Length: 311
Image 1 (tube, rainbow, N blue to C red):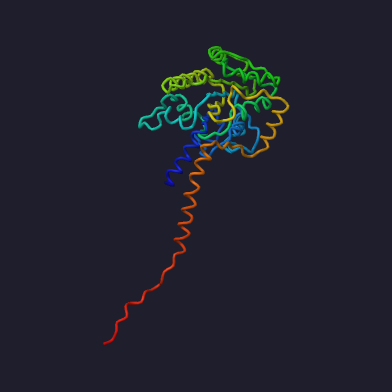
Image 2 (image 1 turned 60 degrees about the vertical axis):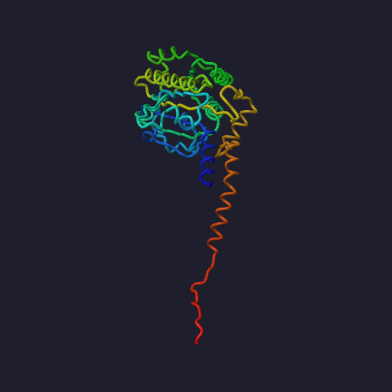
């Protein structure tokens, strides 16, 4: 029963977190295919994109001397941690990555890479919105046109940083050309928000495979340009924000962001996790009481034999 409770608790964690995959063609990370198993706040992804603070859990995995020319952020609208294994055919003996074959290849073969399987919180609130403030004045921000990217563009425009909007085909053509963005000596930002997946499992897998092919095409178009790529997913159902709904920053929301930034930990506790903890608690109490009672058992050190009466 205890094992069942533990499994329920772990499943609740996986079903409420998303996964992030990061890779680079330079020594931006301290190794290849590094993994962080502990739940990681999405806010810590800022360390990768802008190296803003030394407090984040990812800071020790970065090479501060490496400066990429481009930061490319790929955002899925819904991809939980427990869905990654099925899409990538992780349990197949000869798995080649399934619908995420290109993503798997990038993580395994790039010069440096990092995998964060359990990310908590919203990428929109914790990463994109602070990035607007932290981008250098000389840096450019490019967004691929899509319904999901409209809110992102609106936030940048509201902060006085209008984005360049291109179609995916236009972006690939620009990257393959002598684009000034690729040689301005500043880490520019490219955001690609993929469409939300279809509710049907088969069609959903097809849409993820199509997005995976788009990642391959964009990275291939970069050629020798130094870059850091991040493949992340927006908050799943039950979270408080999505790319479509995060608010345009006002004075009130900016104050809220500053208050959140002062917190060292930013972990959401969904209902499933609380339920699993409540289920585990009685079993933990029973085990503690049982062990305590066992330790307090007392018995005689020796037993006297049966007395024999003399005739």
